[in-house]
Length: 123
Image (cartoon, rainbow, N blue to C red; front, side, top):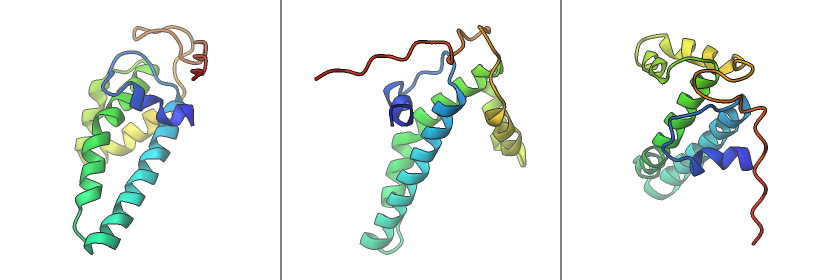
């Protein structure tokens, strides 16, 4: 659950690296939120895209941030995300997201797999 919500804590952070689990757990979180928003739109309004639009607006920056950090993990610039805007470019970006990160430190920072896990907050 911590990795699923970690990108929300780094709302608009485009620096550093993100390991594959951080990206894919957040992607699963996005799918769940979008499905719930679509269901609420269907149940409450019939078909308008009120809740789904709000969800997309609220989660766009965290998703973009974790995607850029994921590209950084494989030693690629975040500008590669623009490839998603051309036909079939999204498939190339998907492959980049699936590839393992570079081991050890790269130009974007230390390996996220070797960083110590933050201690859970005690209330």
